[in-house]
Image (cartoon, rainbow, N blue to C red):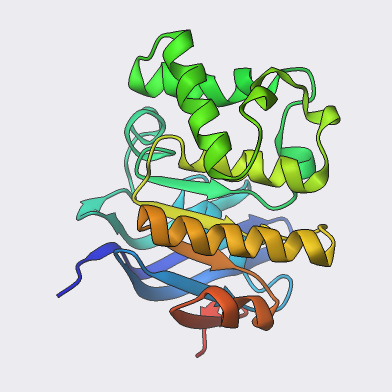
Length: 235
């Protein structure tokens, strides 16, 4: 029997605003098996991205995790101190491919600097070792290894998206959350990114939550699909 790499039970994350409480994630329960892609569909504003950030242990202010359980490889992460989440959980156990790669990279640092920093911090690698690992992962996503020496403004939208995917995989996490990774890309590049994700799933045995509002993409990549509406999984 394939074991669950992620188990979510009765998870609630609410936004506490001046005008009242918004139940962005409202009593969700689901699991993710090893090597599985769970598609998460739903209209804009239904709580898909809020769920992604909550699973990473970093709900966007004024959001707070109210109750519930999130276990990654059997380890409970709800309630862990921020320094433990940062050192032991985020990017190592669970990582995220952010929506809109255009804005996810810092324009004043090279791609290599941004990719090697987590490797040196989490894995204790030297700069040369980290550059080697970053170049290997850039090749894995179909990019020239020399891109480590370039700045984000020198890359196209599709190339930036591939850099973000490579960065999310660098520390070999158990779970990857892909938050609309094809947003703002043209149709041809979208198809390339989807094919890349399928290839990575096959080669690396990735367990992934794939968030999108495009059902045609989910039909292409998902093993199971959950539909969200108003903070709940309805189907």
